[in-house]
Length: 218
Image (tube, rainbow, N blue to C red):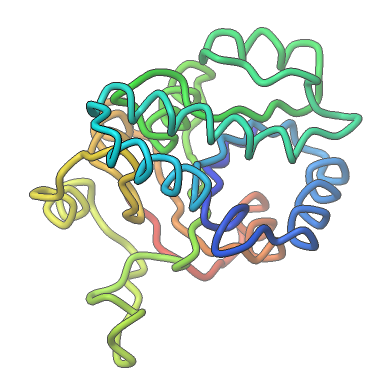
């Protein structure tokens, strides 16, 4: 089994990338491995969360709105080889995986990001790594969007990754390469996190255990 945390900004960024979604759906059907895919909310979630904030919603309710957005994004990835419903818990996802080749899901409950859900899913399934697909493609020594000389960090300990994340508020719609909750789950069960971009050939290299472009944590 392979657990993938698919960044919402890849599925639903400034606009919905229909062609990429088609390619990802085909990849899921064609790859011989059983896949668990946990999809983030991306701009779909952020737009609704910002609107709800202006209406005075608290963080718990904002999280609920974000979770529903992740489930909408997950529905776009359902194929004939994927469970026809979006599971709402990790245990439900495991049960569906006994029947279907692939399972896609979004968030589960307030306070848990989809990265955290992916790590819990890997922990529950006994898997030793999670692939975290992001719009950035790895962890850099500085923000690559604003610094042209940013260099990718190929390997990183849990502690160093946590030091980068520490201090960021866990607001609804948090958008960082990996979050603190996911790192803590990974560390307690010694689960590696491969942070890569959206390229599907690169994803296949990770699955095959070949050299890849990105960052490995752990």
